[in-house]
Length: 92
Image (cartoon, helix red, strand yellow):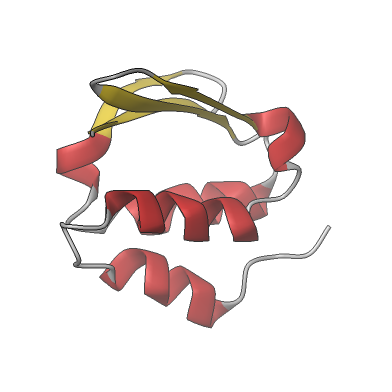
């Protein structure tokens, strides 16, 4: 398991391109540990929904912490639940 770099966390936190939320999630997925188990993406005509689980791994939890500090968070966050589960949604 490779922890996200401080530089990666800063990019996530400072992402301010509201016109490119998909790019933000693509970047996050690239640094997420085990996205094949902790990510589910559903696309419809109107939305892209991201379901993410940290798996309890501190590196993924650091990513979520950086996400929560980003201007992108209030525009995409839908739900959090105990155990490190998060749902985000962007409009197409």
